[in-house]
Length: 280
Ligand code: C2E
Ligand code: CA
Ligand code: CA
Ligand code: CA
Image (cartoon, rainbow, N blue to C red; front, top):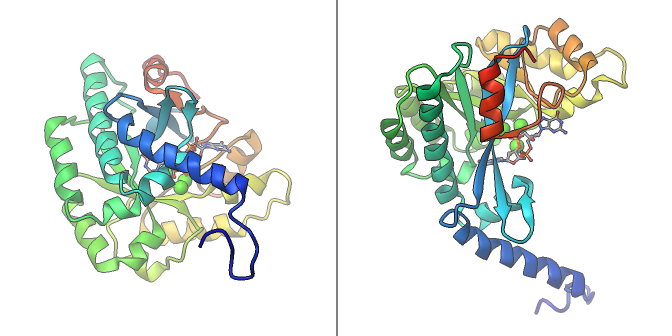
């Protein structure tokens, strides 16, 4: 039973029971969230060395009727484990492209070139994934804004053959790919060189220490070198200070994302910022 662990400890205590209960409530609530219109798209600017917003990352939020805004850190894993992630991300894909098309009809700065969307490994590996993305592209075509999918290196390495197939099929439709949280997984030059990739996203755990340590940045240096060899763009995540931005620029990084420039914004607020064409 769950009441006693292998060593006889009563680990299923009251607090764990509460945890299981709240998790179950999240799982149930998620089933309704799409239909009730509780999911929201937020956008975080991606900024060039010159301070121009060249793109944005889409970040999901759940506006829960009683709990308020819930972070994806809390519900994405629940969605993955309960098999709901594909339905949720299908909504994200469709809604993102619908929004871009709408913005395009109202006017978009020419410098705004791409939007990146996070894709969970289990969703990416599903057989219907390619046609799902194609469907969304056909419904809402926008000529000037590219869609980039963010995936993780472990997914690519663990399912190498299928991942290549999926990526090539989508690349043919104009989709670009970036590796999220780069540097935290197991990939090697040899693997990466075979994949149709466009961007490496330096994980924020390598950017965060920049302020309080010396100006040695061995991991960032290696990532910059790998990207150069592979002909890929690099974007640094979690840039919070001018010092981090300066040092990253010195290391050859030309694209940044982080609170220093802007926090993620609700899509309406984001579009207002985008229209201002303000240098960030
Ligand atoms: P991520 O893909 O690594 O996204 C970046 C996260 O870092 C976001 O958290 C963003 O708000 C946060 N961030 C951005 N700049 C800074 C900064 O300067 N400092 C700090 N401390 N944090 C910063 P958020 O929005 O809470 O999202 C958390 C994670 O949830 C994302 O991490 C991503 O893995 C996941 N996620 C969000 N939306 C989706 C989705 O549609 N599908 C999937 N599979 N995952 C998603
Ligand atoms: Ca991401
Ligand atoms: Ca990331
Ligand atoms: Ca992540």
